[in-house]
Length: 227
Image (cartoon, rainbow, N blue to C red):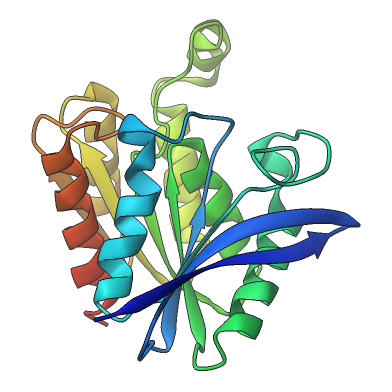
């Protein structure tokens, strides 16, 4: 399906934010808002969001990806992903204004952005689903001591608590090369959650190969259209 690509400018707390909208000629009523993480190059495996948007838009799913305040082409002070709720709200408002056919949102996030998406999803009734790509389940360097004090698997438990608190549908896509990722399916299996877990064998944290990115896009598109 043909999809138009357009630049979208909107404001958040007085700052100008920039997004890219991939708009199919016959958009479905369920769109995808991509939540990005910190500053990054936009070539190589960091083109993942662009390639994902093209696949989804080709299936009729409108997609908006944007830079939150302090990142990329957007204005404002840099902030942590714990403080981008207002940015997501502004992006969602602009998304619905651009696509009047849209009735609900799926949030899609990688790593730390997956947790930011999950937190926001609990506060916005228009969000009917989340796609969490390798949500961070192990501490970064320098965080190991604090995480050990919190007990093993504390980050996985945090993701699980977010899923328990969200009433919508959830898809978790994990890279099989990340040992920490294998904690989550076992935890989800113990609870009656509306959550599907998929592991891509051999894939790392950022799904850096074209084959892995294509598989992520196909899994995401098929799941979004399945309910």
